[in-house]
Image 1 (cartoon, rainbow, N blue to C red):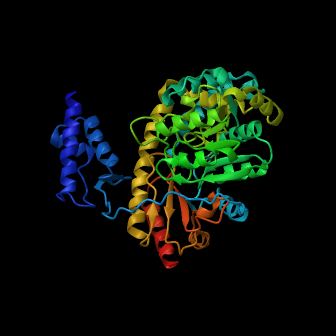
Image 2: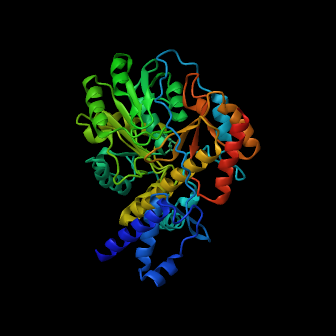
Image 3: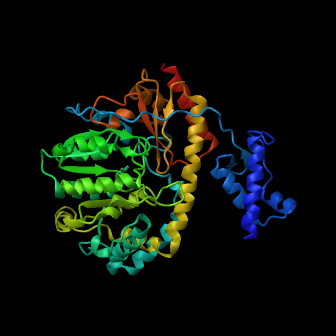
Length: 471
Ligand SMILES: Cc1ncc(COP(=O)(O)O)c(C=O)c1O
């Protein structure tokens, strides 16, 4: 209790010194060791003081150099407007653009602002490696055998336990494992739609969802979406009679980062239930919240099994493991059948590895660190963009997730920006990738999952210069 008081008081007075200019941008702060020896703090208290100030983006730690007062700019950029896609025929998928951007995925000498995953430097790789060895030793045939159709029961049990955090009450019987989130989404779409049906989605939205819907012969209805609160329910209501199914990223959508408020989630679930329109809820980012607690899922309000909840560990733990799952509600039999027909079994070793990692609070410990880094990155990226991008730039302020959505001056075409930036070894995701319509040409998505370094800051500022040169 005494330590709590000490740390809060010290953090407050240091924050005041920064805000009133006693400590200036760029000033070096005493090391943790000095803070302890001169002020009599314990190491934990000293670390907590700096952690708190970092959370407020007042200070920053620089690897091997220590703690410094942040260079936060006074200029706060406005947020992009809510989107207003046309309820008309789509103009098509920019397949060439998408292929070009994704082709750079493995290139080591590029700064990949384009790819929406956390860097492996932010992942607990050595613990995962250890658990994978243990998993291999323990599984039948050292993990070489097929799994039960529904998937690894230890993993399903762990996922069911974690449903408590988003307001759910799942049991392991409600869950089917899949080869990543995309595989879960695709089984869901196949189970509940026929060619010619209309699927409603956010706009802008993750291109994989658009491509999947198109590959199944679905019509896509892009809904007006607010960067803070997600789809506009009023717009959905107006078009409800045209819709056969919905797919929404309710927590920290990709690319806008919007978070649907609980009241909207409740209303949405009721509305769709009344009209018997199934909802596929994509919750890949829900664990990456920057606020105090994990946001709920629509599935928490689902009483009739109308919501098919999909997730994976691709954004939090290991994208290459291909471990995902679905809680398909009343569509369980169809999903099991599709899994049997299309993949027989998910990968035994990686499922067991993740199941083991989920136990003993290791996942929560890792998530706390990852969220902290991502939140700091959101602020650092935002500051670097505010100080180096041309006037007219707008930027989202997500409360979680991995993406920033940047809207530039409408005169700038981000497909052209992509070409210019790639010559300087910087990759971005142009806005046109996130829609089937001719819109968002002046926007881009930047991933905040790369570890912050002086070099990364330099690259962001370089991107600002390349952008300014296009005006
Ligand atoms: C919203 C959304 N859904 C699904 C996926 C695919 O996830 P996975 O790698 O688990 O298949 C992604 C990946 O970027 C995503 O952003």
